[in-house]
Amino acid sequence: MTPSPSFLLLLLLLLSLQGQPAQAEEEDTTLELVQMLYRHGDRSPILMYPTDPHKNVSALWPAGLGQLTKRGKVMQYGLGRWLRNRYEALVGPAWVPGELNVLSTDVDRTLMSAACNLASFYYPKEPNERFEADLPWVPTPIHTVPAAYDKLLSVDEACPRVFLEEKRVQELPEVKKVIEANQDLFKFVTEKSGVTVDNVTTLSYLFDTLYIESLYNLTLPNWAKEVHDRMKEINNFSFKLMAYTQELKRLRAGPLIKEFGHNMKVRTAGNASQTKMFMYSGHDKTVASLLEGLGVFNGVAPPYIATVLVELHRVNDQHYVKMYYCNDTAMTEAPHPLILPGCSERCPLDKWLALTASVVPQNMDKECHSPSPFDLPLNALAATSAAIALGVLLLILVTYNLITRHHQKSHFAYQAVPSSSP
Image 1 (cartoon, rainbow, N blue to C red):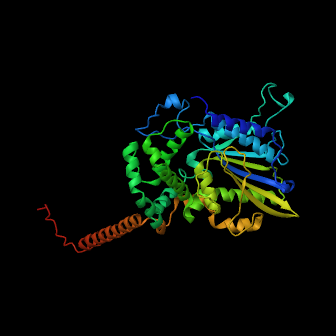
Image 2: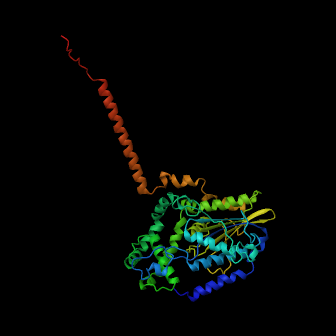
Image 3: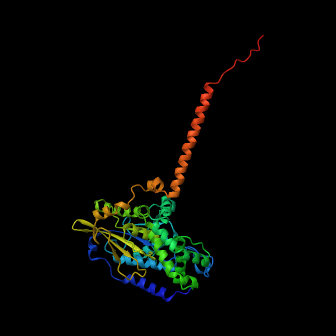
C-alpha cells in the first residue's frame, strides 16, 4: 500500500518531537515517581468479515491479523520520545538497572509497542554509549506474564468471574434498553456483513475492522457508511461496559490501581527502592477499564497510544498525585488533567488511596474464583437452588433406604437348617 499523506504528516509530527524541549510541569522538580499505562500502536484488524471486499489478508496485512503495523511502530517511537522530553529530569538518558520497570501483556503488539517506545526513550547519541557504534539502541528489559496468569493488565482469561459479571451486565435494564433499541442495526449489519451480530461486543469488533480499513483509505461498502455513526456510538458504549459495575471495576481496574497505590507507598516510605518509572503496555480495554475504575472515563474508545499518566509529587514534605490522559495520537496536544472524583487536580496521596480503596481487591484469587451465590444471574441462581434441592432430596431417599434395610435385617426370622446326621 502507498503511504497516505496523512500518514506521512503523522510521521513528520512524531519525529519532530525528538527535538522539542521538555514538556514537564513547573513542579516537575518535585516529581518522585511516574506510572503510566498506554495502549499499543496502530494494528491490523482482529477479524475479517465474510463479505469484506478487502479480506486478502496476506496482501493487505502481511504480518497477519492483530499485529502492530509500521504506523504503529512509528506512533510508539514518537510516544517514547515525548516521554523522554517530559521526564528527562526524572529518568536519566542511560538505562540503569531498577530505575525503570516495564510490564506488558503477553501479546505481540503490546510487547513490540513497548520495545518501540523504549527504542526512543533510551537513545544513546554518542557512539561510546552504544554496544555497537553504528546502532543507536539500548536493549531494555520488558517483562510479561502468560495470559492465563495475568491478573493485572489482562485479567479476563485468568479471572472466570469477569465473564459471570459481564453476563449480569447484559441483563441490566439500561443495557437491555440499548440493545433492544438497536435490534434493527444488529439485523442490518448481520445481513450485510455475514457476521451474526447480537451483542455490542461483536458489533464493536466489526466496527474496529471497518475503522482500520478506512484509516488505510480502503473503500468501505455503502452499507457501512450508512450506519457508521450508529456503530461508532455502540462501540463507545461497549468500552463503557468494560468496568460498568463495581464488581468489574474491582476485577478489571482494581489490580492496576492497587499496584499504583503500592508503588507510591513504597516510594514515600523512604525505602531503598530506586524505581522512578513504571511503564505498562496494554490494550484499549485496559485503558478504558482503568479510566472507568478511577471514575474519569470520557466515554470515548481509547485511540492508539492513548496514555494514562499517574505522577507522584512531593511539595513541602507532602505527597500529591497528579493524573493526566493523553488521547491525541499525534501527540501534539497537551495531556488532559484527570481529577479523581472527590479530590482536586493535585490530590493528596492519602486521600487518593482512600478514594480508590472501594475498587481495590483485597484477594484477587478469591474474588476471581469464589463468587457468592448472590452474584449469580437469576437463571444460574435458580439452577443452583434446584441442584441443591435435588441433592437434599436424594440424600433423604438414600438415608431412608438405608434405615429401612437395617430395620428389616434386625427383624429377620431365622430358621434352623435340618441336620444331615442320622
